[in-house]
Length: 268
Image 1 (cartoon, rainbow, N blue to C red):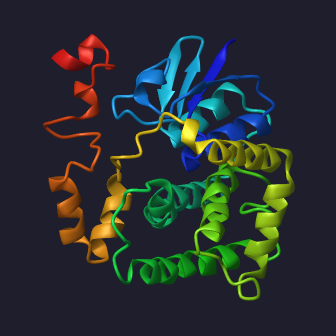
Image 2: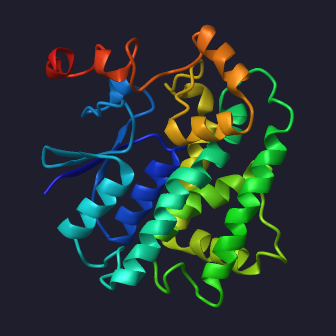
Protein backbone atom coordinates (compact mmCIF):
# COMPACT_ATOMS: atom_id res chain seq x y z
CA UNK A 1 0.00 0.00 0.00
CA UNK A 2 1.24 3.47 -0.92
CA UNK A 3 -0.87 6.53 -0.12
CA UNK A 4 -0.05 10.05 -1.29
CA UNK A 5 -2.17 13.09 -0.54
CA UNK A 6 -1.67 16.09 -2.81
CA UNK A 7 -2.60 19.24 -0.90
CA UNK A 8 -2.44 22.98 -0.55
CA UNK A 9 -2.15 23.47 3.23
CA UNK A 10 -4.54 26.47 3.54
CA UNK A 11 -7.35 24.66 1.69
CA UNK A 12 -10.14 23.63 4.09
CA UNK A 13 -10.84 20.59 1.91
CA UNK A 14 -7.21 19.48 2.13
CA UNK A 15 -7.17 20.10 5.87
CA UNK A 16 -10.34 18.06 6.24
CA UNK A 17 -8.91 15.03 4.42
CA UNK A 18 -5.51 15.20 6.09
CA UNK A 19 -7.09 15.29 9.56
CA UNK A 20 -9.35 12.35 8.73
CA UNK A 21 -6.40 10.31 7.46
CA UNK A 22 -4.44 11.07 10.62
CA UNK A 23 -7.45 10.09 12.73
CA UNK A 24 -7.52 6.75 10.92
CA UNK A 25 -3.84 6.25 11.71
CA UNK A 26 -2.87 5.95 8.05
CA UNK A 27 0.68 6.35 6.83
CA UNK A 28 0.82 8.63 3.82
CA UNK A 29 3.12 10.95 1.95
CA UNK A 30 2.28 14.57 1.22
CA UNK A 31 2.76 16.11 -2.23
CA UNK A 32 2.57 19.87 -2.93
CA UNK A 33 -0.46 21.14 -4.79
CA UNK A 34 -0.40 24.91 -4.49
CA UNK A 35 0.13 25.01 -8.27
CA UNK A 36 -1.30 22.51 -10.75
CA UNK A 37 2.14 21.84 -12.24
CA UNK A 38 3.32 20.39 -8.92
CA UNK A 39 0.63 17.73 -8.54
CA UNK A 40 1.78 14.15 -9.14
CA UNK A 41 -1.71 13.28 -10.40
CA UNK A 42 -4.25 15.28 -12.39
CA UNK A 43 -7.71 16.48 -11.40
CA UNK A 44 -9.70 17.72 -14.43
CA UNK A 45 -10.81 20.74 -12.37
CA UNK A 46 -7.22 21.51 -11.35
CA UNK A 47 -8.20 21.35 -7.69
CA UNK A 48 -6.88 19.67 -4.57
CA UNK A 49 -6.98 17.47 -2.58
CA UNK A 50 -6.04 14.50 -4.70
CA UNK A 51 -5.52 11.05 -3.18
CA UNK A 52 -3.26 8.54 -4.89
CA UNK A 53 -3.60 4.98 -3.61
CA UNK A 54 -0.94 2.82 -5.29
CA UNK A 55 -1.60 4.59 -8.58
CA UNK A 56 -5.38 4.82 -8.19
CA UNK A 57 -6.52 8.46 -8.14
CA UNK A 58 -9.47 9.87 -6.18
CA UNK A 59 -10.47 13.55 -6.35
CA UNK A 60 -12.99 15.68 -4.42
CA UNK A 61 -12.82 15.66 -0.62
CA UNK A 62 -16.14 13.87 0.17
CA UNK A 63 -15.34 11.21 -2.42
CA UNK A 64 -11.88 10.78 -0.91
CA UNK A 65 -13.32 10.37 2.60
CA UNK A 66 -15.95 7.91 1.39
CA UNK A 67 -13.27 5.93 -0.42
CA UNK A 68 -11.01 5.87 2.61
CA UNK A 69 -13.82 4.79 4.91
CA UNK A 70 -14.47 1.77 2.71
CA UNK A 71 -10.80 1.04 2.17
CA UNK A 72 -9.84 1.49 5.84
CA UNK A 73 -13.07 1.13 7.84
CA UNK A 74 -11.59 1.19 11.34
CA UNK A 75 -12.06 3.69 12.83
CA UNK A 76 -14.97 4.78 10.68
CA UNK A 77 -15.83 8.41 10.02
CA UNK A 78 -19.31 7.70 8.63
CA UNK A 79 -21.86 5.98 10.92
CA UNK A 80 -23.65 2.82 9.84
CA UNK A 81 -26.96 4.00 11.26
CA UNK A 82 -28.90 5.57 8.35
CA UNK A 83 -30.11 8.62 10.27
CA UNK A 84 -26.74 9.28 11.85
CA UNK A 85 -25.12 8.92 8.43
CA UNK A 86 -27.59 11.40 6.94
CA UNK A 87 -26.79 13.88 9.73
CA UNK A 88 -23.05 13.57 9.15
CA UNK A 89 -23.47 14.04 5.40
CA UNK A 90 -25.74 17.02 5.89
CA UNK A 91 -23.14 18.79 8.02
CA UNK A 92 -20.27 17.78 5.75
CA UNK A 93 -22.19 19.17 2.78
CA UNK A 94 -23.05 22.36 4.69
CA UNK A 95 -19.39 22.85 5.57
CA UNK A 96 -18.23 22.18 2.01
CA UNK A 97 -20.77 24.45 0.33
CA UNK A 98 -22.58 27.08 2.42
CA UNK A 99 -19.97 27.62 5.14
CA UNK A 100 -17.01 27.40 2.77
CA UNK A 101 -18.59 29.96 0.45
CA UNK A 102 -18.85 32.56 3.21
CA UNK A 103 -15.47 31.92 4.84
CA UNK A 104 -13.46 31.61 1.63
CA UNK A 105 -14.97 34.63 -0.12
CA UNK A 106 -14.11 36.84 2.87
CA UNK A 107 -10.76 35.07 3.26
CA UNK A 108 -9.84 35.93 -0.33
CA UNK A 109 -9.14 39.48 0.80
CA UNK A 110 -6.45 38.11 3.10
CA UNK A 111 -5.11 35.55 0.65
CA UNK A 112 -4.95 37.73 -2.47
CA UNK A 113 -3.11 41.01 -1.80
CA UNK A 114 -4.07 42.69 -5.09
CA UNK A 115 -7.84 42.42 -4.79
CA UNK A 116 -9.71 45.74 -4.91
CA UNK A 117 -11.19 46.92 -1.63
CA UNK A 118 -13.93 44.64 -0.31
CA UNK A 119 -17.35 45.81 -1.52
CA UNK A 120 -19.48 47.62 1.04
CA UNK A 121 -21.81 45.37 2.98
CA UNK A 122 -20.13 42.08 2.07
CA UNK A 123 -18.55 41.49 5.49
CA UNK A 124 -21.85 42.32 7.18
CA UNK A 125 -23.65 39.84 4.91
CA UNK A 126 -21.08 37.18 5.81
CA UNK A 127 -21.57 37.78 9.53
CA UNK A 128 -25.34 37.60 9.12
CA UNK A 129 -25.30 34.35 7.16
CA UNK A 130 -22.65 32.58 9.18
CA UNK A 131 -24.46 33.37 12.43
CA UNK A 132 -27.38 31.29 11.16
CA UNK A 133 -25.07 28.32 10.62
CA UNK A 134 -23.57 28.75 14.10
CA UNK A 135 -27.12 28.78 15.52
CA UNK A 136 -27.91 25.49 13.77
CA UNK A 137 -24.63 23.93 14.88
CA UNK A 138 -25.27 25.05 18.46
CA UNK A 139 -28.67 23.31 18.43
CA UNK A 140 -27.21 20.17 16.86
CA UNK A 141 -24.36 19.87 19.33
CA UNK A 142 -26.38 20.47 22.48
CA UNK A 143 -24.66 18.34 25.10
CA UNK A 144 -22.72 16.29 22.55
CA UNK A 145 -18.95 16.41 22.35
CA UNK A 146 -19.02 15.98 18.57
CA UNK A 147 -21.60 16.54 15.85
CA UNK A 148 -22.74 12.92 15.83
CA UNK A 149 -21.71 11.90 19.40
CA UNK A 150 -18.33 10.64 18.21
CA UNK A 151 -15.77 11.99 15.78
CA UNK A 152 -16.95 11.85 12.17
CA UNK A 153 -16.42 13.35 8.73
CA UNK A 154 -18.73 16.19 9.78
CA UNK A 155 -16.29 17.34 12.46
CA UNK A 156 -13.33 17.24 10.09
CA UNK A 157 -15.27 19.19 7.46
CA UNK A 158 -16.56 21.83 9.88
CA UNK A 159 -13.43 22.41 11.91
CA UNK A 160 -11.23 24.19 9.30
CA UNK A 161 -14.15 26.41 8.31
CA UNK A 162 -15.14 27.44 11.85
CA UNK A 163 -11.52 27.90 12.91
CA UNK A 164 -10.79 30.07 9.85
CA UNK A 165 -13.97 32.07 10.31
CA UNK A 166 -12.93 33.02 13.82
CA UNK A 167 -9.67 34.41 12.41
CA UNK A 168 -11.38 36.37 9.60
CA UNK A 169 -13.74 38.55 11.58
CA UNK A 170 -16.53 35.95 11.39
CA UNK A 171 -16.48 34.64 14.97
CA UNK A 172 -19.33 32.94 16.77
CA UNK A 173 -20.77 34.47 19.92
CA UNK A 174 -19.09 32.64 22.81
CA UNK A 175 -22.14 32.95 25.08
CA UNK A 176 -24.79 32.32 22.43
CA UNK A 177 -22.78 29.49 20.87
CA UNK A 178 -21.22 27.94 23.97
CA UNK A 179 -21.45 24.39 22.59
CA UNK A 180 -19.76 25.48 19.36
CA UNK A 181 -16.98 27.14 21.34
CA UNK A 182 -16.43 24.00 23.45
CA UNK A 183 -16.48 21.81 20.33
CA UNK A 184 -13.91 24.02 18.58
CA UNK A 185 -11.56 23.84 21.56
CA UNK A 186 -12.06 20.08 21.71
CA UNK A 187 -11.24 19.65 18.03
CA UNK A 188 -8.20 21.92 18.25
CA UNK A 189 -6.81 19.97 21.20
CA UNK A 190 -7.03 16.64 19.39
CA UNK A 191 -3.82 15.32 17.76
CA UNK A 192 -5.31 15.97 14.31
CA UNK A 193 -6.21 19.52 15.34
CA UNK A 194 -2.72 20.23 16.62
CA UNK A 195 -1.17 18.86 13.43
CA UNK A 196 -3.55 20.95 11.33
CA UNK A 197 -2.74 24.08 13.32
CA UNK A 198 1.01 23.58 12.91
CA UNK A 199 0.79 22.92 9.16
CA UNK A 200 -1.46 25.91 8.52
CA UNK A 201 0.70 28.28 10.57
CA UNK A 202 3.84 27.07 8.80
CA UNK A 203 2.33 27.74 5.36
CA UNK A 204 1.26 31.26 6.29
CA UNK A 205 4.62 31.99 7.91
CA UNK A 206 6.25 31.16 4.57
CA UNK A 207 3.60 32.54 2.24
CA UNK A 208 6.17 34.49 0.22
CA UNK A 209 7.86 31.20 -0.71
CA UNK A 210 4.71 29.45 -1.93
CA UNK A 211 3.90 28.72 -5.57
CA UNK A 212 0.19 29.52 -5.45
CA UNK A 213 -1.27 31.87 -8.07
CA UNK A 214 -1.94 35.05 -6.08
CA UNK A 215 -3.11 37.01 -9.14
CA UNK A 216 -6.21 35.08 -10.23
CA UNK A 217 -8.98 33.54 -8.13
CA UNK A 218 -10.97 30.38 -8.77
CA UNK A 219 -14.12 31.42 -6.93
CA UNK A 220 -15.83 28.07 -7.37
CA UNK A 221 -19.52 27.31 -7.77
CA UNK A 222 -20.91 27.91 -4.29
CA UNK A 223 -18.51 30.75 -3.47
CA UNK A 224 -19.48 32.58 -6.65
CA UNK A 225 -23.17 31.93 -6.02
CA UNK A 226 -22.92 33.49 -2.56
CA UNK A 227 -20.96 36.47 -3.91
CA UNK A 228 -23.53 37.13 -6.64
CA UNK A 229 -26.48 36.58 -4.32
CA UNK A 230 -25.12 39.40 -2.19
CA UNK A 231 -25.24 41.92 -5.00
CA UNK A 232 -21.71 41.69 -6.41
CA UNK A 233 -22.48 40.83 -10.05
CA UNK A 234 -21.00 44.07 -11.40
CA UNK A 235 -17.92 43.76 -9.19
CA UNK A 236 -17.34 40.18 -10.36
CA UNK A 237 -17.90 41.10 -14.02
CA UNK A 238 -15.13 43.66 -13.69
CA UNK A 239 -12.82 40.96 -12.30
CA UNK A 240 -13.60 38.77 -15.32
CA UNK A 241 -12.86 41.64 -17.75
CA UNK A 242 -9.52 42.20 -16.02
CA UNK A 243 -8.62 38.49 -16.35
CA UNK A 244 -8.47 38.06 -12.57
CA UNK A 245 -10.63 34.92 -12.53
CA UNK A 246 -9.28 31.37 -12.81
CA UNK A 247 -11.82 29.01 -14.34
CA UNK A 248 -12.11 25.25 -13.82
CA UNK A 249 -14.62 24.92 -16.68
CA UNK A 250 -15.49 27.01 -19.72
CA UNK A 251 -14.38 27.57 -23.30
CA UNK A 252 -11.05 29.23 -22.55
CA UNK A 253 -8.17 28.86 -20.10
CA UNK A 254 -9.85 26.07 -18.20
CA UNK A 255 -8.09 23.18 -16.53
CA UNK A 256 -8.83 20.73 -19.36
CA UNK A 257 -6.82 22.99 -21.66
CA UNK A 258 -3.95 23.22 -19.22
CA UNK A 259 -0.55 22.13 -20.56
CA UNK A 260 -0.34 19.97 -17.44
CA UNK A 261 -3.46 17.98 -18.35
CA UNK A 262 -3.15 14.43 -19.71
CA UNK A 263 -3.26 14.20 -23.50
CA UNK A 264 -6.65 12.48 -23.30
CA UNK A 265 -8.17 15.59 -21.80
CA UNK A 266 -7.24 17.61 -24.89
CA UNK A 267 -8.99 15.21 -27.25
CA UNK A 268 -12.05 14.21 -25.22
